[in-house]
Amino acid sequence: MKNEVKVLSEKCDKQTSHSNKLNLANLSKYICFALVGFSSIASAVQQTTTDLNEQDKRNEARAHAKELGSNLKTRLQEAIKRGGLEAGVEECKLVAEPIAHSLSKEGWTVGRTALRVRNPNNKPDDWETAQLIKFAEQLSENVTGPLEATHVDGKTGEFRYMKAITTGQVCTACHGEQVAPSVLSAIKKAYPEDEATGFKPGSLRGAFTLRYSPTDAE
Ligand code: HEC
Image 1: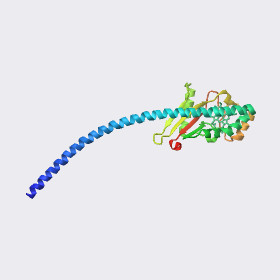
Image 2: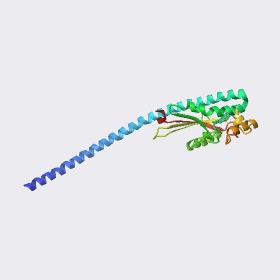
Image 3: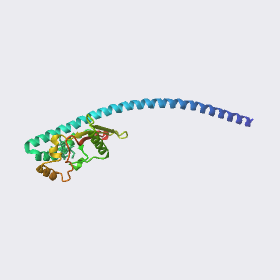
Image 4: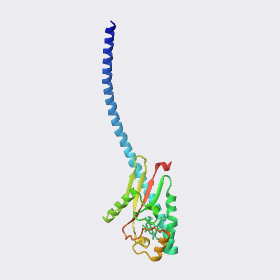
């Protein structure tokens, strides 16, 4: 009798565990379906929010770049009018970094860079170098429209933006192939390591470069 009970109870255990297994298998299938469904919806939502954020950030970056460009231009023009190109060089030396610094707030870092720089603090990093090379190629292929690049770091949420700056005729007075000796000596005095001459009108001079870091914005 004792043995019979034992056998019966073992049988029952086997059955329940069998049926449990089946149910679990079914259930996990449903859960699996549900999860796959949800995650694809979730990633679609995430995708559109990222796209929207990216669009917002690009617009903000464009506005900051424009502000930096126009502030610098105003200061440069005033200085040249006052004391010629040599004064322009001095003014640039005095104000370029502080202006960029004053616009760097709420998570943004705003600046300029180039493949050949006048101010060594403007040297590009790897990502910037790659974009500058691309811009130069696009310019040589006469690609029309503003040359821009963006990058989003999926892990940190960091957003980067660059916009090409071409060499205008007025720029050649300080960045061109034939810079007047007095201007050149003012440049060399302020920037002994200057690499930023020899640019032809229409060629790539450099780029605005901006970075938005969510952790800095907190
Ligand atoms: C009066 C001389 C002068 C003129 C004109 C001038 N620049 Fe510059 N430029 C400078 C100086 C000085 C610097 C270094 C500023 C600094 O310390 O960041 C500089 C820096 C730059 C940089 C940052 C990268 C680097 O080389 O350090 C860019 C980009 C640039 N100039 C573009 C232009 C463009 C485009 C024009 C024409 C619209 C122009 N510049 C006209 C003197 C001049």
